Amino acid sequence: MFRCVDLDSQGVLHVQEGGELPVKPPPEGTVRWLDLRGDDAGGLDRLREGFDFHPLAIEDCRQFDQRPKLEEYRDHLFLVIQGFSSPGEIVEELTLHELHAFLGKNYLVTVTSDDVLALGETWKRVTQNPAALQRGPDFVYYLISSRLVEAQFPLLDRITDELEGLEDRVLSKPAREDLSRIFELKRHLVMMRKVLSPQRDTLAMLGRRDDPRVSERTSHYFRDVHDQLVRLNESIEANRDLLGNALDAYLSAVSNRTNEIMKYLTLLSAVFLPLAFIVGFFGQNFDDLPGLPNWTHSDALMYAMIAACVLTPVSMVAWFRYRHWI
Image (spheres, helix red, strand yellow):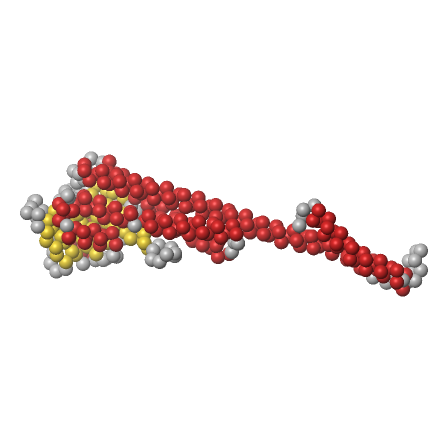
């Protein structure tokens, strides 16, 4: 479905949604923003015919799995940027939003497969304030990209807060669920870095290149978006380090707990080893021993065996405590 907003030479906005829209470059003196929502093959064909976009760019628009990029064609730029969203306080799943755009001298064409919050907010601002579109289509694209990038900061803050709590929990009482959550968050961060890292280069090109479709004044704003992406990537790397620390802490805590268990089992075996010898010795099936006739009926030896069975583990535990083994 198409929607269109025009700003004519008199400074008057014309907003159209649905129906027959002018899918073509605007007349001289008019600035146009044309938005195509949904995976509409017929709409893409109309864009190609009306604007004479390059077939490769139209083909990229048919597949919403592109890498963030900037491609220069004869009379327009083709740009792909992406962002993430995740409902709720806990980041369970990341939803990827991809925005394709054609930026010309006096027009901006955006193509999305789903509802992008940044795009909707910018559309509302532009349709209510002609000054935004009056500054040019490049400035409108800056507004969209800026909002899309800014939406990533709260998402990363939620991941950082959870990481800090996860690290404290792992140090105090590690659980198997913590390990699976560590790898889940690591997968989220890898996905975000995979998208935002090349996007940083794309916005840097918009801020530094000398192109007539991007004014010098707007290029400064794109540099600001590039700086935000640099901060995002730094935050992602910092969170990856925190994840690595949390994983090391978990493995160290589990290893220490295993060592503690093995230590106590070893000490327990050491305590029962002399007891097994004593009981085994006095349980021999002989009536006489050299120097101890009829020893199996001796009350003194029975009391000696009981005393040895009591004193041996007590003395061994005392020795372990003295050596600080327990």
